[in-house]
Amino acid sequence: MGKIYPPGKVKLIAGLISNDEALFDKIEVILEKRLKNKIDFRSGIIDFTYTDYYDKEMGRDLKRRFLSFKKLVRLERIAKTKLETNNIEKRFCVDGKRAVNIDPGYIDMAKLVLLSTKDYSHRVHAGNGIFAEVTLHYKDKRFNFWPWTYPDYKSEEYIRIFGAIRDMYKDAKGA
Image 1: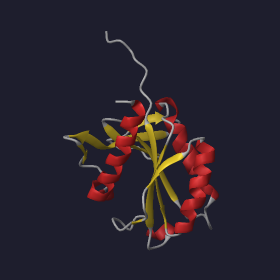
Image 2 (image 1 turned 120 degrees about the vertical axis):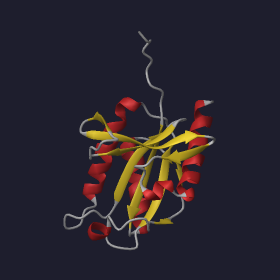
Image 3 (image 1 turned 45 degrees about the vertical axis):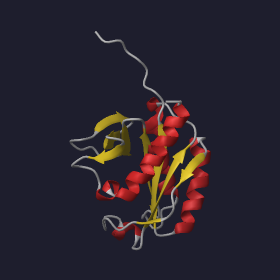
Image 4 (image 1 turned 60 degrees about the vertical axis):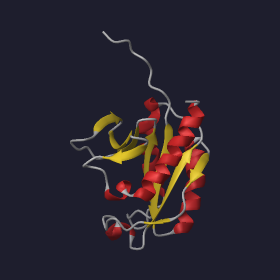
């Protein structure tokens, strides 16, 4: 029988999508307050051109921004983060349509995990109706994708961003 160890803390991240760049600043303030965690990384604005999945609901010319948060968090609470971001999305809905999409997840030394309300063959239940997906894995000094990884998360631009956030995590852990 193996010895049980508590999981280590992880680096919380969030990806924001909207066609209203001014909304990013408002969402960031709310996220810091609701998550009780300061933003320590903010990517530039990235054109979101990999899919038209959100166009019908959110409009065209969508933009993306990634964030990470300073305090490392316990995995036991990670599913609640997705519930919190869903509530924030609802707050900004217009006529039942989202103005912003918030994709929370986390980075540790071995992987990037995204949280979802949707189950699928490559996702596991993380609690409270939230599912976790290992979207990228770290190997050969870089993040690498899986067959199910979203096209944008396969891009070199995103992989560089997540590598920089992983370095911040590594420094915070003293690894």
